[in-house]
Image 1: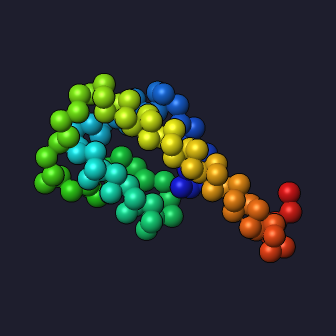
Image 2: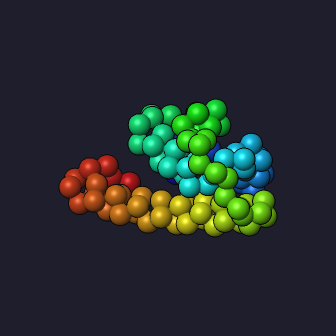
Length: 102
C-alpha cells in the first residue's frame, strides 16, 4: 500500500464497499485522483476526499458493474504485487547503505 504505517486490510468486503460508493465515478478520473492524493497527502484518503478530487465532468465508463468490480480487484492485486516488489527492493537498498537492520 501507499501508506505502510496504516493498518488497512484490503478484503473483498472492503473492495465491494468502496466500489459501491465510488462506482458512479469514471474509473480513469478516479484513478488519477487517487494518484494525486497519495502523492500529496500523508494519510490514507477517505471516500469523500477521493470523490472531491475526481473530475466529475468526465463521462462514466461504459463497463458493467461486474466488469468494473473485477477490473478493480485485478488492479488491487497488481498494486499489491508491485508494492511487495518495491518493499523488497527498498529494504535491500536501505540495508546496502547501512540502514535499518532486520
